[in-house]
Amino acid sequence: MSRRAFLVLAFLSVFGLVLALWARIELDWANARVQGTALAGTFIALGWVATFFFREFSASIERRLRSSDIQRALLAEIADYAETLELSDAEGMKDDLAREIAANPAFRPYFFRVSAPVIFEANDEAVPLLPEEVIDDVIAFYSTLSDLRSMIEDLRDPAFGLLDGARRLRSYRDYVDLMANTARLARDAAVRLDDSLADRVTAYTRPDATNGFGGVR
Image (cartoon, rainbow, N blue to C red; front, side):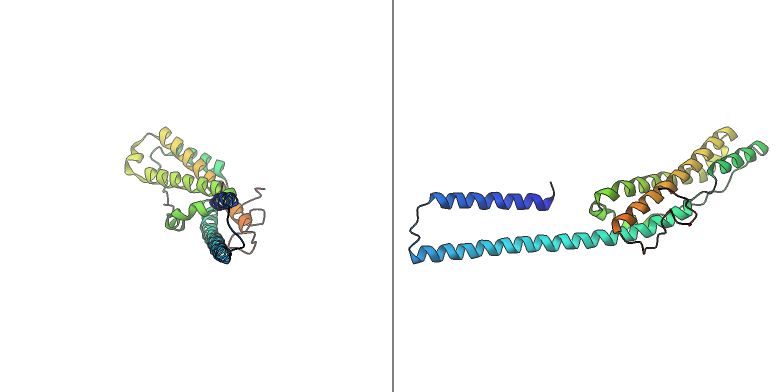
């Protein structure tokens, strides 16, 4: 149950209880003082109700605007990752690595670092504001991105170069697969964000367009 629904239900329950209590109390409604008191109480109650719903409505609008801003910022960042991490031929890259190591067992490719997700890290506390249909894909991407960045640091470690060629080749293959999977998750998350925003005029070009991502839907 949402926070708003819970508060409305709680208010209606209390209001109903008050009405029930009033119904059991015998009052002289012809008395002007009783009428004035009842009228004043009614206006106070109505004012409280109006204030409550206005505050909730304003908070709801603010949350929606905040959610939209976060989604647009994440969309720009994730779309950039999708293009940066995209591999044109993952299997071909793994075959090339195998041939290089077979020809030169000491071969060690250079691994570029992947930039930190600064927008996500700066707004991690706002992630719960994302719509339900978006949050799973976004979290899946950033979690896998974290794994990829950690793996790259391991591969760049001088101690890794001391391993035998077969073990390094297995790690290289895992690295290529992880990068390809991270790029796929980035595309999926970007599509989800784009659909959620319902705005096709964004910094992100849909994967079903001719942008080099290929069709994913």
